[in-house]
Image 1 (cartoon, rainbow, N blue to C red):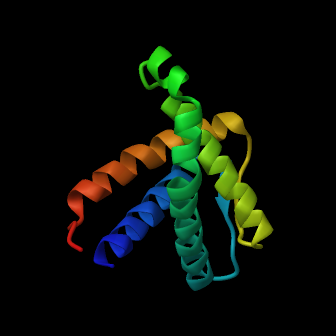
Image 2: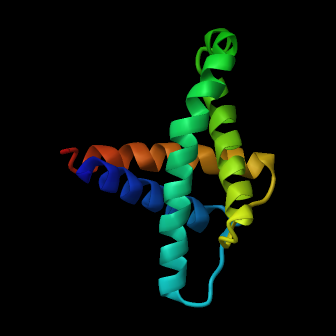
Length: 125
């Protein structure tokens, strides 16, 4: 359970950094508390997308992973971020990613920051 909380906090922090650095990734809300709640919900949604959808996509694109020596991961991460943005709109969360190249940059930032936070945060079950 603790590992789940740590991963969610890392995802929320990584999403917050991407929102801060990339102008076309937006999180809107009435108040700071509402924005934080939305960010946590989007982090949970992003984690769910990465848990359920990403392994299937990686399996289906396995030849591309081999051919590109793993660089297709940037595209897969961008697609997962775009899917999260679409699902956030479906669930009426105020999170939006504008365009594919914005998603590529956001996915890269989220991957790096999430990795760094997962290294820094404790990893106990």
